[in-house]
Image: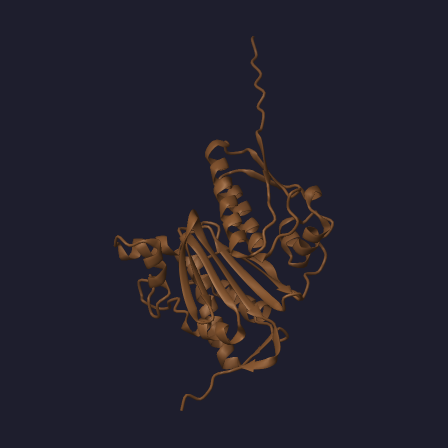
Amino acid sequence: MNMCYYIVIMRKENLKIPTINDAASDFDRLINLDKKIREICNHVPRGSKICLDFSECSFLRQNAVAYLGAISTYLKIDCGYKVFYKMGTMNERIIKMLTDDGFIQKNFTTHKNSNKPISSDVVKFNHFKGDLNSDVELSREIRSYIDDDWLKNDWIRISETLKQDISAKMYEIFANALEHSKSTVGCFACGQKYEETSEFVLSVIDLGVGIPGSVKKFLNEPINDTEAIAWAFKNNNTTRSNKVGGLGLDLIAEFLSLNHGELSIYSNNVCYRIKDKKVIIVPIETFFPGTIVNIRLRIDKNSFYLYTNSN
């Protein structure tokens, strides 16, 4: 009997991760990284290894950490790849940051830092997935994440009534990422506090259809991404069939103005930014098939934010 033997060579793709901060140019770099990864997916067969190399990366901010969680999960779950992090190529600063925010503890249980506590000076890395309409625990976890991990009383002082309303608007951002994005892997979030600039920043990322994509499908009208994202953030506009909710950002804009904070949203071919109560919508060159929300607040322990009596 003649026997045939087959040797299968598993392909390995090495992907270098660049330094990513959170200026506008860094979001361009992050979106171009996403484009490069998706191009790799077009020619690398399922089951291959994708190795993330950090030898050319000096630092990653919260937006990059949330993205790494999202794209790694997407590559494994949706695309069938084996994803490896080359920990030996990370400098000590990156390792510390990924340990402080819990990224390593949540994703690499055998790493030597996997038992270290998450720092109180971060908004821990988190992954949310599920149906908010039926999963009460998921809804509670998101509200706790916003109220207790991000809007911490020792970072910024807000009256309970105002905090509840801001939290409700933030919750809508997570709800949009889970309900309307159509992402199969949910949404990912991470935050950092930066003493040198006296600010703390939260990023929420999904890899779904994007806000403009969701709006255009809902309206079924020939509008561009700029018009679509402007519609999405008008008060009372929502793609929910029951008309409940909506991402109107007037309250957030007012609060950001008082705090000298900033909100940036990158989705599909457009960037929506709020700063000093001004809304700026600009096109971006590279298409991002999902949504990145970045909210920056100033650490303010000496002020107390509350509603004033309009009468």
